[in-house]
Image (cartoon, rainbow, N blue to C red):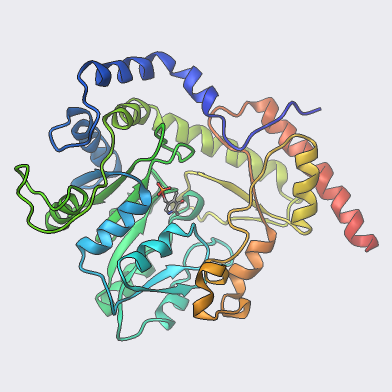
Length: 381
Ligand SMILES: *Cc1c(COP(=O)(O)O)cnc(C)c1O
């Protein structure tokens, strides 16, 4: 019998490193270093540490991952009249950022085995107005950056890597976020590196983009206070969030290895039981923000698992272009056949560094039983 297995367990993570986190927070409180001004030592410290971890020259901390996408597009001069290629299977933030800067998202189907943006479909949707592409390293698996960069070079596109789910992932040994012009990260609490609230970061090797992004996030100020060169906005990372993130960052490599070990166990034990997995070719290092399986009768299996106390999630149940929010584009499922099929089959299972082996076994056993039960139902239907 299951005793309830959640999709993430932030309490277990806190218990594991409670002392370090409590000390980190006390230091911020002692100095009243709450607001992410350029002079905030905790935010500046996290920016240095995370740039080193991610492999980029510049890191600009900001309010959240959605702001990071939007501010980087703005910093690159993407705006009204521009078309931006966005995968059809991702979180809505990827497309919202495009619309918020006044540009038009052009949705691209995904690869049937890896679920990331399909480079040949992207190439087919390029027009004279296309100015940027946002590959998403979905669930922690790098998008095909060699192909994305070839298309980008051919059409002079700005490449913004959405790394919100892929802290530490690598393609051919090279960190994601270092292929394109810039990268956005989210530190939403359940991400692989999570704050205790909203937080995000913008990474790039391009100093001009970094400076412009920092200005936009700080009301257009540069250097001195009240020196507003442009109209910007407020998107700051709190000092408390920066301190939490710096403390957790030290553990991220070990947490990632545990995620990978749990995922390979799932792959071994669920082979032949589920219909398929997200493919992970050897040159890609997957960091398993999510572990997703493909199932027939997905909704029935999910219902059965819920009754056994096992939480699962569908990321995502509808392809982005088919959401009501994008009804104005008049897309039909046939425009994105792969994303439309995947959204009916995919199910994310509990996977986080604190998941115990006995919980892992419970998920495997319960899923096997529910798949068998669902298959009997489908056969008799
Ligand atoms: C989480 C996420 C975002 C947005 O990050 P927030 O910090 O929640 O704003 C953007 N893109 C993807 C793919 C995400 O998973």
